[in-house]
Image (cartoon, rainbow, N blue to C red; front, side, top):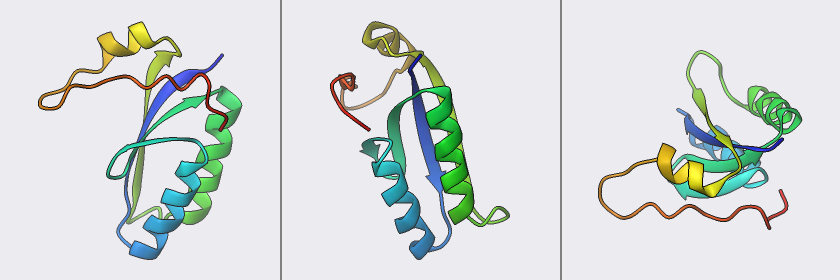
Length: 97
């Protein structure tokens, strides 16, 4: 089962930040600076965490994973709220990661 996962990262070194960004582009859609919305299976999430762990400095950097629930845009609309520009859920079902 695929679920939406919001991944946010704070990387202290610009070289590592670029490497993390490149990894993340392979797993999701860039929605804000250092934030990606992904559709991940359990296997995908493990692979992503492993790839990121190889790049980040564990005492200086941080990557947060927020599971938002199964891939269902109606549920996503209820889970994610915002202030400012309207949040429009992306239909990621047709995208290949």
